[in-house]
Length: 220
Image (cartoon, rainbow, N blue to C red):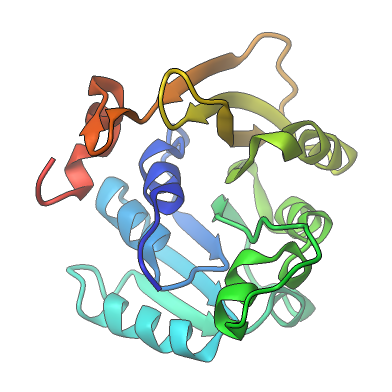
């Protein structure tokens, strides 16, 4: 599947201020988040989980062909299987989770799996993060803006609290489309909430988007 803007945004935006040693990418797809975090950080252990066989095989191939094959590992498993015997805690957990909660499906089972929330319910994702996250860890996701309040509530129930929120718009005149959320176990009264606009016109990117993502594009 093609690399989408959501994955690029999350990989570039995710805070690494705690200098993570270990990273977990839940629902890795073809591995874009793991690869971006290998490029951005000095994390020595970057694990990924992917349930779809084709995406898993592509992820493994991408990891092996990257400059960091010794730091990257992909598990062919769903989250429940991975959680059965958790061996490690992670300093950073990232996920670009399935997000269509609507009832309709497409004619592509693979795309449905990647896109629909029933493949990885937010409740399961948040609970897993709260179990697997280290004491000073960071949990970072991108979700539809309309799900922001509910997701923050689910996280709070698991003692995870937002410390950075960026709301994303396609252009300055369109509605907010996505929320980038970073959580920790520390509840902060005052934390960063800002807005990011991607384009001024079709394929004409804002200076803010360019500054955030330029290290990951060949032409930007």
